[in-house]
Image (cartoon, rainbow, N blue to C red; front, top):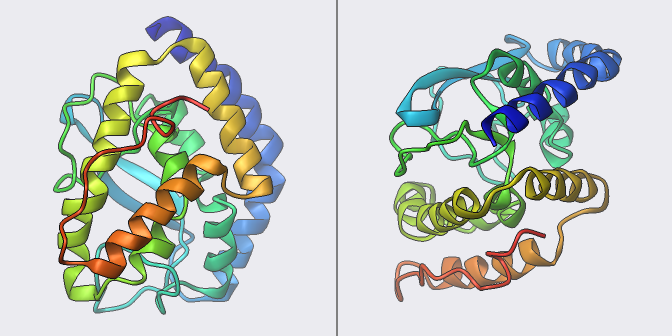
Length: 229
């Protein structure tokens, strides 16, 4: 699986970077002129076996002296106008193809977490997309209903355990073909919006958010969400 996975990463990432280069240059220009600050956002994330690495994104937020909450929500005033577009279509993630080529990440896998949010020892490289990414596509919208001073608590109680279950299920059942299916599902969701699994889980978390902090969140993921689309 490791050789197949690495082969797929390289076969997809190299032409993707070449084909997307004109679009990425345009994004770099728009980010540069839309607000002061660097073009790229760099952040330390946790990878395979808890090894930390630098993750790259196009900057979608204003550079501020007071950074605010580490967790970003929909409607966050720190997000730039061009950042709204980049985040909606996941264009801010395109520089992570470079992380894939470097070997820090894979195309498919659990998303790389902030070191203090990672609860798993990942045997796989983290991915640009994955099961949890698809199911929690509307995460920022859900979190926008939580008071800023309670975001970390809600994330730890309601979001993190559910993502961990999906990540563990992916690592238990991942194959070359399931990775291809997840890549296809990601591409279609970017162009055509969230799928049924994301909408189902969004509805559940919105109900948890409305009732937060009582009653506590149910950590159980629906059986349909545990199936690779």
